[in-house]
Length: 234
Image (cartoon, rainbow, N blue to C red; front, side, top):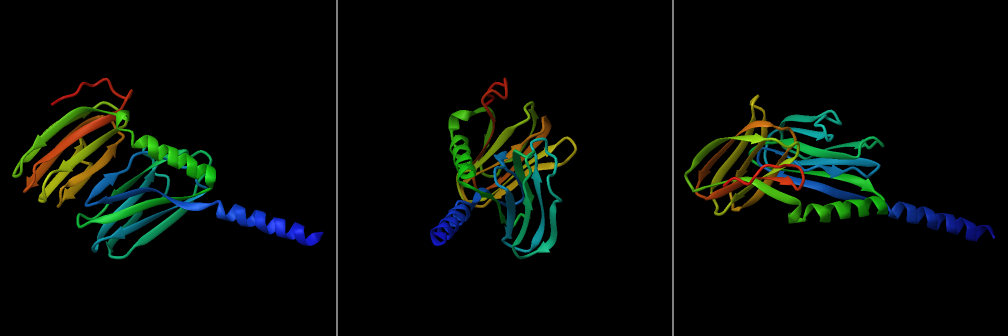
């Protein structure tokens, strides 16, 4: 009678272990400075992996919804190899965002968390909801041609907005978004056509700069429905 009991315990332990897995919740690729959207923290522990494409400096922060650092920032100079930092979640932390100040030659940064089946389902549902284009509305948009040097002031009145940056041909196109104190909230280079985005969580006046060689471009600022009464601006 003891053998079946031992086997059942082993099976239960095996099922418990196999129910947990590492979920790649957020992956950022960039050339410069980017901040992710806010994502749910449902795992009992997490890890951040940074992979540079060349030697350079980097600063990585995990922020709560109020922009306060949750961990001691990862800061490296002349880094030329992957680095990983890990930590444990606590019950008070429900959501977070990832901010990377990396080298303009390129990098990849991934936030992973160790989740059970219920946590995995919560992330799956959040990921599907975040892809719903109806959740967002444009309230400002600018476009330009190859060879442009563009600069304008942007008054962001909401606490949460996304800056979407698109280039339409291969070229060298740079976007910068600086606040009134000169802090960079978004810096990215496009060498090929495509899209990238960055999130801003602090209302205020910003300076948007775009420099283009070889490609037309477009920049739009979007907010989630219900977060702004601002009207669309061409």
